[in-house]
Image 1 (tube, rainbow, N blue to C red):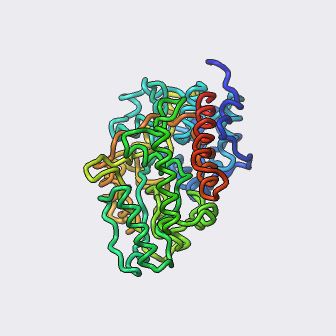
Image 2 (spheres, one colour; image 1 turned 45 degrees about the horizontal axis):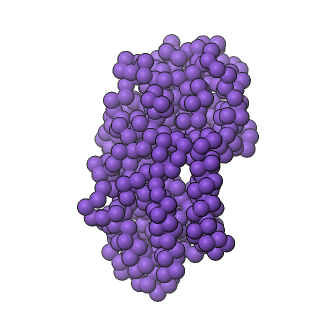
Image 3 (cartoon, rainbow, N blue to C red; image 1 turned 90 degrees about the vertical axis):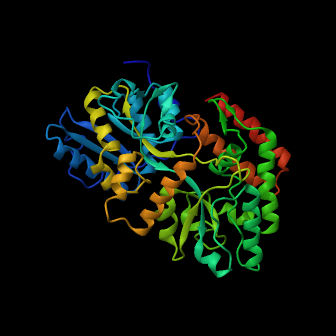
Length: 437
């Protein structure tokens, strides 16, 4: 059975969420309670639309495999992680678990997830995935999850606004200096009507791109940062300079919209036409909220001859419960979900482009892509050719570090603390969180 799994451990490092009632999608898959004892339980999280689509795949799998029985358990994101931690600690967690990258290390090191290595290459096929996606699903050298969909960071821009003020759209060949110049030019060309860009100084995903462009990493292993104090100082100085020149939004505007709050994002509210976009969010998170045309291009790099800092990430993974009594059958379902053309054509881009090459090819050849879907798929394929190797699995304290970075950025932007003091506090508290995770 392995060592006991503590609910407190799984909810640590800032990962606890408010408890809410589960949402079970309206599909005919077998449900817990009314399920037969040999049903494979499959849990996932998200909004009702995503859960309905994912749940429908349980039905599809059972139609293709009449002897299989799948019980789909869909939960709203807000309550999913608390519920899963409780199930894990109680020994009644689902067999197949939808899990995200920030929690992979935490669940893996708690002994909650089963290594898939013994199923590869027989039951489970991993050869259709970019190596970067596989690495991020590994903990201590073991493959604990396979990716469902892929996400790539880029720079989103409002093409309509840029055309309005007479600026040529960026082509993705820019450096960080070019990005700053372009953002400032937006403000100047619009005569102050628009700021140039969002202020992502508190966004760890954008900081990671900055440090990677300098040949550093966000983390060094699971217990320390992988970048220098000088790099962090340059990061905050970069955005402070842009803020003063109108090249990024004010502190007040930035505080109203953290990444993920799409309706209040500067790009959607037309405060600024530039900002980070992760490919799964281009359509649903941005384009669906504005009548302007939103495009995406590559993130800046340190020099024209330097490597691009982006890499493909997984929007989420499927993993096996380490205590599953039906692991062999569960592994078959997991493999079908992440690898089959049927699944790819059903999921489409609800969480980003399919992670498997075969899935993306099936979707690209379907003949019914929307313009936004084609835009995302085309960018994804192009970005993959220019990506650099991904880091390993994010540390368990990743979420806590994100909170600390946001506080440091706001303390600097609102002048509540000097940059030097905010940086010292962030590094000290961040290292403490990493060391104790």
